[in-house]
Length: 509
Image (cartoon, rainbow, N blue to C red):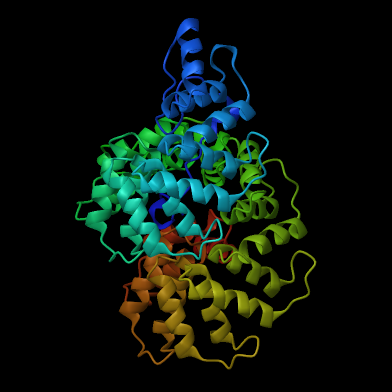
């Protein structure tokens, strides 16, 4: 159920706004605009120059006021100087003025149309960050624009070709998804992701990880290289990247596999609130993986945190914990039903099957409702869930709900389930071969093969069946009391009453 998140399928255009003006970064805007160090006399001269109309110095004064250098602080003053500079055509001041309108700074009312106007003026002069923002406005249809991804792609590319990392990443996204008039081209996407990633942009580094993990863009699958790139944004605190690092450490081949590292990264991601990591950390506690002490109560705590974020896997796990009295919970079928339903309604196949079982048996305060049970089994089976397929097969075999008895259809679903390794379905196929049901010819050898598959997985009923075959010389076997006793004992150890009775009978004889 665990797999790395693939975020490149999402379009992550976000405006690059001079938000530092409102939060007070002291040295550098996120756009690379730097406030130079000057002494008091130099600052005085800068102000005099600005008052005389020097656009560059007006822009610098805006920066001083905007970032709070040398005791100067005031968005309104910064706005005044940026506007003076922008009115004279200074591109970075025009961009910053656009940011003031976009953010509603300096006493301005937020005004996307006015922000767009200033971004366009700056972009037309070739300022890369403004070109990116103009592309983002076209992509999203902001500022009164009609959404136009072709125009967006034009401006994003202009910005990217100047080396702006955020634009390079988004050009990669456009190529990866075939947007903006670009043909879908993973090789080209990879090129732009790499350029951006080499500048340290976390989203691009993450995307490179995805491409290496999947073997996209002409790359060979390479878990080690994927891990390298995922780790970079993970170490910057990206919770999704942290989760993916955990998944690789948990699921990788022997050289990289490290459950202790997986637990560490799941915890980092989980503590930042990422629901999938919270669920996986819960699983590690439930099973004692990753050097953790087995602790079902701690597992339930993490499941609950993920479930409250509507994570279907965690919702199912909470339901299962209530159904089985795990983690200090008192068995509560009504509460289990509630959580199974939440997960099933999100399309989680295992929960759909569980909800079907509750309707079939009338648990959790439900009335028995075979029609509703059939609906949920069919949903689960349709997603390839082995138990859902088995239960749907049983409904066909028995003619439950509104279905006519149909052994051939039952066999089809049993086989789909059995081929995924579901022991209940494997035994059912063994019965069908033994009796010649579902259009099959009787075949003791094939019957034995399927009984053995189920028995070797520890299914007690199949273990009893296999013991029976050995005791009486069925399924094409010679009688073998010692082998019969061995299988009966395995079955009886799990509480199978028929196996216990068989062992008792053999002792008497």
